Image (tube, rainbow, N blue to C red; front, side):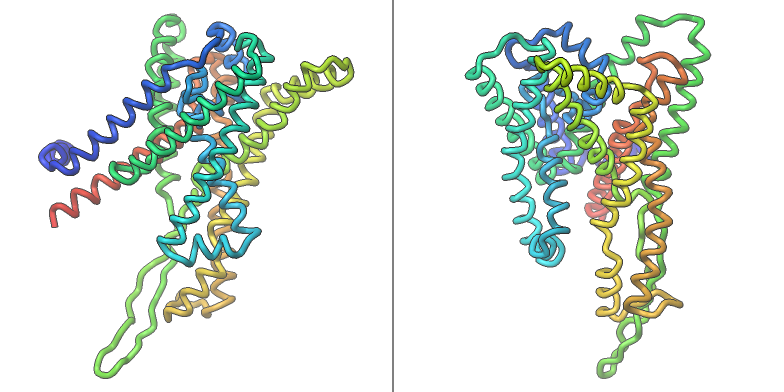
Length: 421
């Protein structure tokens, strides 16, 4: 079956061209990711990332470009942050919510344009903060103000370029461009992780490695199961008679996904945990002894493994409910169903249907929130269980990889089905 699909892809010129276009963009991305900004102390940088879990997670969302301080060090993180802020603003400003949900394709294009414009100042702030912080840590050499601002301009330009390349993939290639770029950055780290395990291999660790592989397969299968899991709610349409014709009377279903929020709650939680640490890291270099001691105490508290894992899990759990409430509006869905003459069997249209949907989404989200929380703290748990840093399953990266692969496969299948017809 897979061989037949591969033959169809190779034979179809348009589909083959789309896939080659995506590969070309990914090659450009990896070339940019290999170009470091001037003055990087590589040994100090590796030491800094090895002892900092927060920046390790931030490196995932940058597409693997932060660990060598490349010109694309921010990756698509500013664009993701801008999109999240715009989503949150829809709760405050009804006009933005109307633009995004009710004005169709034109409204969404305008909404996305605001997200792009917001990316530029966010990228500038993030670049200035990260470069200043890394300079204090000794990762960068002594930078003058002009050199620092020059590096900020380069990093912001590269981030905007990467955002444009991601949108080109979405428009002319296969899959969601931003997700594909993050996917490429995660996959690019696999060879180095495998080589690290191979060079430090010990025969006594063989049972541990075999057990790790088995656990990894089980976790991947579970991730696919939860990502694809959904709760179908039956929907029936009332019969309507117009003239001599009968309309409606059909039955369908409304799918509610178990993981309605995707990886967004993990990004929210990461931002909440990362921001205080960046502020405290700045204060740790203060000349005031009291501020310096308090900052170091707070950093030690945050870097304690169990405390970090517990806070991360709780934030992801809470933000899963929050983001699901933002994106899934039972009252709006119930109102639209009522206008279309549709109803849930056994439930009255209108507010009773909205209450029923609230009840279902709260129960489903509980499973999704626990799943996302466990996925987020999975690397920490694997380090504690195995005691080997190299043998860690990056839960966040795993979720992104599985989601991107499934979405890309679906899009390729739909393209093949369309061409068959």
